[in-house]
Image (spheres, one colour):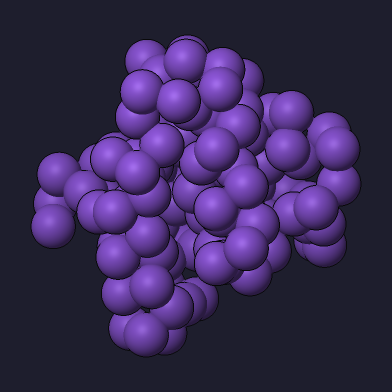
Length: 106
């Protein structure tokens, strides 16, 4: 689970602590999510686009904002994690255990 959380934190982009209301479906948020995925998860543009599609379909804006935090932004990721319920964190964890594998090779 630590490895999964580590992967989740490697996707960079927006911070809900810095941006009060993140619209996960906004084109800029999606573009940032995809670019960060490519850079930090070393996945192709099409695989990252697939991952963004799955995130938009399965997660809420808060979860996507959490996944979009820069890998080294420990302060904001810790604050966001503390603000989420166990159920919310479990949903993110489950997403990161399945979605990247489903999008790999696309």
